[in-house]
Every structure is written in structure tokens, then in C-alpha cells.
Length: 134
Image 1 (cartoon, rainbow, N blue to C red):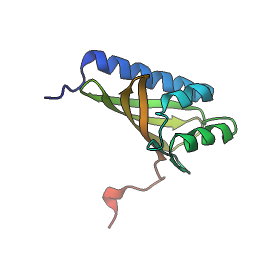
Image 2: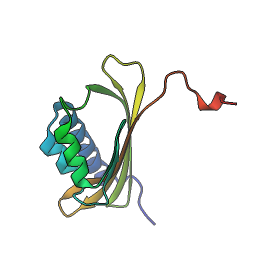
Image 3: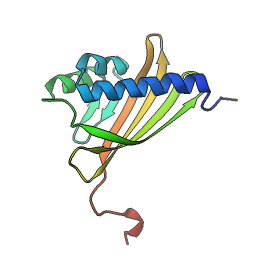
């Protein structure tokens, strides 16, 4: 049976997610690139872009003027499965914005440490509650 949230593995992934957030907020492009698995299968869906493969993700970071908008994390949920696989979900709010954002990341343990293999960032639409849709 696969162990869920082994304390040691959870601590490792939590440290990686926290370090990613620090790199994101300081626009440390080299560190950000280092968090993603360098492979053509790595995917990052952003608020306004779909990036397929590590090279596209790295090129996006280089071409992004000023880095990510500053934000505060509202909630972070991390779940590990076994020793080598984890998912991280972050709810955030950008400075000066009213909309809430969401970030999902799939992490794997690689030979060089924990790496993101899939990421998705989105912003909630204002005033849209799908539970109330006809």
C-alpha cells in the first residue's frame, strides 16, 4: 500500500514548495527553472499561456518582464503519495487584486531532487459561481 503524507516526504516537498514561492516572488529565474523537470513532457498552463516542454517554460520566464505579480498565499495543501510523488495546491491573492488565484503542481522525486512535471495557474472569475448556473 502506498503511504500518504509520510512525515519525512511531506517535509521535503513542503520545503520545495516554499523555496519555489520564494524564487517566484524574487524573480529568481535560474532557481525557478531548476524546480521544473528538464524534459519535453513537462507542462505549465499559466493564466494566459500554455507551455509544453521545459524549453518553452524557460523561455517564458526569460521573456517575462518583471517576473510574477506579487502575491500572498492564502492556503497551501500538499499531499504526498509514497516516497516519490506529490501534489501541491496553493490558493493565493495578488497584491491589489480582489480575485483569488489557484496553482496546482505535480512533483516527482528525480535524481537531482524534487521537480515539477506539471503546473497549472488560474484566476477565479469575478461573480461567477458555477453552482448557481442554470
